[in-house]
Length: 399
Ligand SMILES: Cc1cc2nc3c(=O)[nH]c(=O)nc-3n(C[C@H](O)[C@H](O)[C@H](O)COP(=O)(O)OP(=O)(O)OC[C@H]3O[C@@H](n4cnc5c(N)ncnc54)[C@H](O)[C@@H]3O)c2cc1C
Image (cartoon, rainbow, N blue to C red; front, top):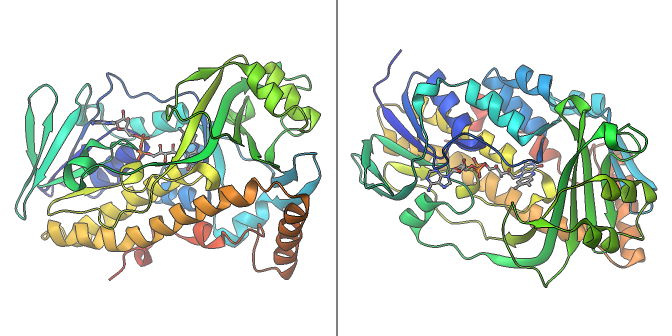
């Protein structure tokens, strides 16, 4: 089934490969251009909420992702001293949202996505530096001087997107005053060789710790957020000394100190925030994933939103295959309001997690308990609307 529309996807990351999968299944001619010499990911985990898992289900990728991922029996929210604020049973979330979440190593997720498209549709070492578009065609230029023409160009080239800059100009990142440390550690290296004493989201003054299993629970992924206005380097691969982390969290629960003492390699990155942008589409070119809506990591939704984008773009082009310009507008209309709301919610969640005043923190924890008790809100943090969404359903297309 070749529907003749030629679609060039710039970037072979989580969003780009999902998009390629979604479009190939709809019978389009797709080619992915990736700047790296191989499809690879940084060593870190990624959380996929119920919404992301439903989107993957619609692409027949839920099972392979679950097979290599990890499903915690419950979602735990704890204070920095270990008191449990809330415990949400995984079966409850599955009943309420139609799917359970999953946590996975980024490299494993990328492997599943890469294996879901023929290798022949991916060109490596192709760094795009400009996109041009009109009502009738689109073109991408690469740093080696080559140029390709396509019916549609999709920029899935991540947070520092060249496609976005080419279409809409430079972005304006704002330093948040927050940084992150992260590491991935074999569970067998931990003193107790089990995940349970560590897993969950730990909230404390000036910080949040996110601890979950990946690779069938053989590895533990930890991301430690902290307020720090002095470090402003926005890199995902800058290493740091673990002594700095041990010192910073020395008053937190001893189980967490075990993790810090075990991890050999730690990375540190400064968190920058960007306002939602007012447009994603120009003529026959559009953007998705971090290129369109970079967000802070506090909701664990960056990858999930990129996956949703890919599904909905596939559905929009399928619906309006004879009108690619209209299809891209339909895609943007369907996706931009939701993704922008997620960006803004992630921003406020960071502040709510890092509360310094014990009274303010207690008020937050009581509010969570009350909302859960009232029954309407599974996690008590008002994020049901994110998990409920189903990118694979006909209702995902708006108008
Ligand atoms: C450490 C870490 C932890 C995270 N944890 C979570 C989490 O728990 N849950 C969650 O949902 N999200 C998480 N995120 C965010 C999430 O990973 C991103 O939102 C997601 O990867 C976005 O996918 P993407 O395809 O848009 O961009 P990317 O995954 O960044 O992929 C972009 C691709 O484009 C390529 N590229 C870049 N420039 C060019 C160019 N000019 N030409 C061609 N190719 C190019 C890159 O090499 C890359 O392969 C995390 C991010 C990090 C760094």
